[in-house]
Length: 95
Image 1 (spheres, rainbow, N blue to C red):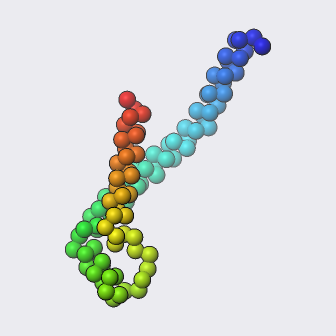
Image 2: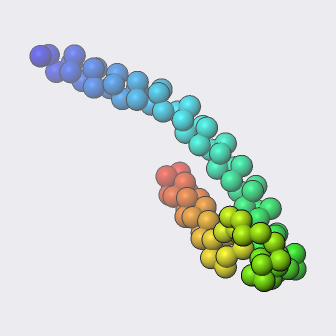
Image 3: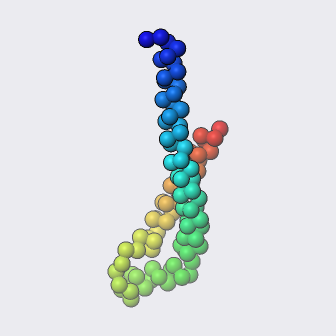
């Protein structure tokens, strides 16, 4: 096969890949921004007086046992660290 045709075909496939994935990246950025907004709201709750009160009520069975990972000491922090790690990865890509 002529190397010119091979080269053009290879780069055409790369272009196709980019065109197919740019919308996915754009959507991911939208989701990422939404996650940071939610994280900011969650950070205001986590560790607040209301949070401590909710933890106490939950621990003393004053409210039904529901899914309440938000009341754990690590879950919110771990999610926040994951978001910061992603942010670091995005910055690295930009360099």
